[in-house]
Image 1 (tube, helix red, strand yellow):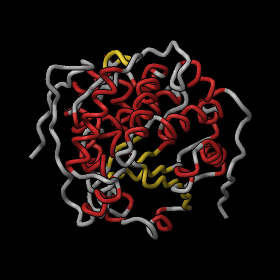
Image 2 (cartoon, rainbow, N blue to C red; image 1 turned 180 degrees about the vertical axis):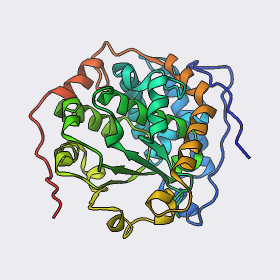
Image 3 (cartoon, rainbow, N blue to C red; image 1 turned 90 degrees about the horizontal axis):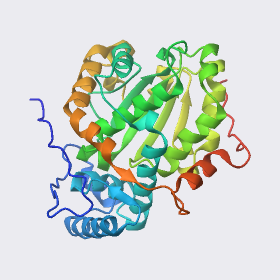
Image 4 (cartoon, rainbow, N blue to C red; image 1 turned 90 degrees about the vertical axis):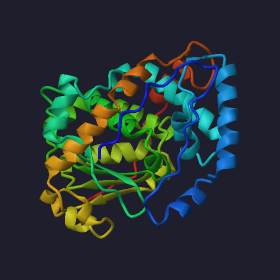
Length: 329
């Protein structure tokens, strides 16, 4: 049975009543352990939601923002119910959406460019989750045609996936495992990637991404793509960097990952087309909610740490970091 579409969220900072729809994740045997790790119980949820909503209502720079429980719990769960951590990520999340509209605006699976990337299998989520409930995504990054697409298309496609599953309670609690298949990357792809862009992507992932990143796996990495991997690793914070691993092929990856979850073409159970179809359905189901979020607004013309100047300064300033070099023997 296909889940029904959710209603459009309210964007008022202080609505007369709040959408308090709260549900606990189900499925994995380890879910109680997961809830313990993120320090979640009903009393904590109610207290933190009230505190975060009061903070949003009084925030001098936030103008329009979702305040429903589904949305705010993205940030609280990602930061293990630390109010300070969740509020900081929310500020930077709203700032990133404003500073990078080419990444975060018009996340519409019916958009011709996004639809084409979805059709060729550039990025999709797998139908089944890990034993711990993690969502698994698979990106065949080399399928991004460098003659027709830019790095912005890749970032926008990844933003589409994150937002399509953003309100999913199990995704919020258990997190994500991202697999990048690099086998089709060619020298031509270097023309659309720069260290500056890699720094921007890493800065967003380090500071403004409200998800629990459990692992990032790169598979089939050709020599032409090693500098991309090394570059991102150099800009990631230590927490994310420690969860990155490189594998020669899928056989080596299987030492850490359940092959049955993968598409049939890689040794799994269901064909790639079925995983891609399920992903498109998820994007379609949440289409109106994602487009509504384009209306969220924050003022960035000030001197706070999430201002336009500070965010761009953090991206562009300073020397290029020292990379943790990865090699394939």
